[in-house]
Length: 115
Length: 110
Image 1: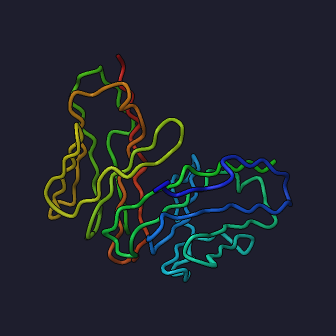
Image 2 (image 1 turned 90 degrees about the vertical axis):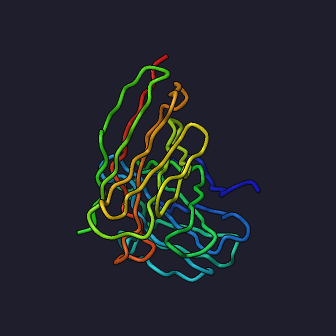
């Protein structure tokens, strides 16, 4: 398996623009997580899906952020409009199930810079 | 309050040394994760353990649920082990939300 695939690897955009990050989880994994990593706050869970359904989105910072999982093999995280404080590395991860005892598999991350 | 604390924050070692990174947490958990983040930024899950000890190559992870403490050991350290090591716990009150430690930056010099 190719692992969790994220795109793009790097994104540079201007404030106010829409940004869409993409993730393909490992085939057969039922849970998908979006994390954000910054120097100040470390790793933070934004949202997680189980069987394509959003289970916990309490980490989504504000209405400018939205996430979808239209099917088991694809998820998007959208920021509209983007702001400089959104600059961070965004990781997608998947696991076999939603249980807390499941190992996580991370994508390579998307480095987002909002100018 | 759900907290995960790691020590040390930074660790420099010479190649071949035995390394220990510690992780303490504040309340009950069902399992604990150890992650490795390389200088390039990628994150790899090293261990997920709920009791006792796990070993993978030169890496050993232990956990004591009663004492709320876990350790990650690296035997015969090598410069390629240089990375940030992060422990994370899914607190029972927060479902699948992991609480992450701040990470330990390990540098192994040749």
